[in-house]
Length: 115
Image (cartoon, rainbow, N blue to C red):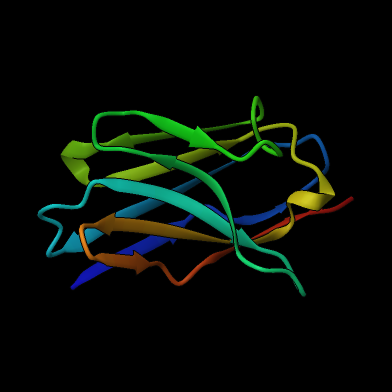
């Protein structure tokens, strides 16, 4: 099993910034892609950004240029730097990790963008 623990969510004003962190532990051998998804009230969970073990990244169009995903393989941690936050970015953000045949999710961290 793989455990994913997120941190860094909170309340921020429009235009502000936050950084989310997610640390993986347990049977992490073979974990390749890590990433972030989000789910707003009444909406389906959607991809925000992913990063491979080699550093290749993928972003949703809605966050391109505002969010940056990175990872530190030495400490099994993935980060999401979020800038120029908008009210529509309000959601529960979930960390995700995958290896062949398996996918794992964190418990989620709330991000609220409001004045």
